[in-house]
Length: 83
Length: 83
Length: 150
Length: 150
Image (cartoon, rainbow over all chains, first blue to last red; front, side, top):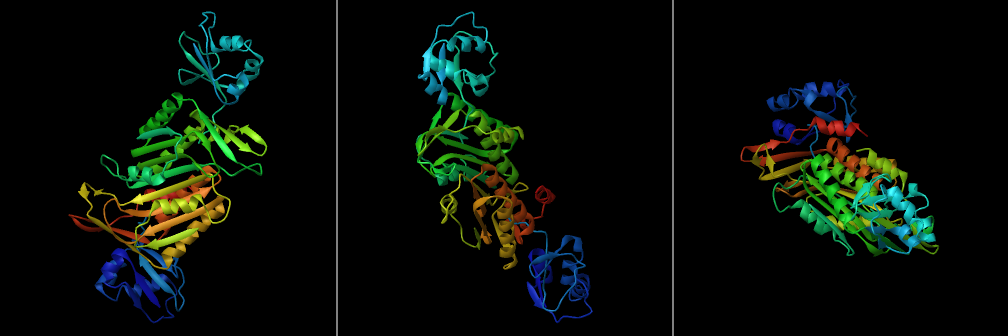
């Protein structure tokens, strides 16, 4: 699976994307987030308060309880500020 | 007094403006209109239905019962259609 | 804060440049520009030309009053109103209204407000020429309704 | 019906020309164009530059979806959305949205709608540089409120 980080989440994790092997125990995004937070202090900081984070799977916005499938691209980023 | 006509009112009266001597018996625009209608068939036609006509005195919109003063410029025209 | 009534065509990029970079600060974060164009058809008949008549003196007074109302209601850094008169052809530019502000919604609302009031208060009259002859355009109740929103 | 995400600056008169004279008829009677510009100050500190990051792929998908929603809701003859990314300076153009229609209010509403949805749905993030350092711009609740109007 491809994981993407943008804006300050990218700065905290130190990576803009990373590839993970899909774990069938991840039934929802929340399970993935729990595992990602153990990867580094930066990951823990980026994902500490998920009310500040928006989630997209395959370019569509989803909630944290959305289910995951192998091959999904999962992105984490702050509320958008373009325009 | 200067009287102005625009759009189809100008076409009906045949004049874009005309000068009248102020008559102190004109207490309101309605009195002026009654006299103007006697000037020609075209004037009568232009001013026949005052619900189709907007009135301005000295560049401000007024109602037909607005009072008149010597020296006023009184304009008659259809609802506006610019823009 | 320009109001112009003219027989000449206008260049939208000139108007936009003035709104984007005003003579005095602050420069805006948001610019909305509206342009009205001569339509090409009326009741399925091609419009060959249009003549715009106006009431010189009153027109400028009303447009300036509308501009001042908009500047009073919204925090604007710039306003432009240009309206053409005389003979125009299909797809010609008739009117441009621009409003610049620090705030997106203020610039949208001010431009929309100015157009709604211009449509119902500014003394312009359109006569459209088709193969059917010349016809004075009728005012529309929807325009009065649009004005009453504000 | 163009959607463009680019590092390059854009010329508003080119975008306007496309809306005014579409490749296919009908030509519109009304064109509304909105431009968003880099502001010059943040909390009384001059902004020296801004960096716009985005999510390539998702950005285009979201902008196209917003454009399609606008075209579904209003009778539009043309829509243009251009959004810049990368490093920008004060007063630089960030975004242009244009909507053309036979109807004045449709062109205003469509442009306003597209901006409200772009502000809350399109994955762009601004980082502003001032003498205070670089700061990610915070999303505003007023933008979510603006979206919920529609």
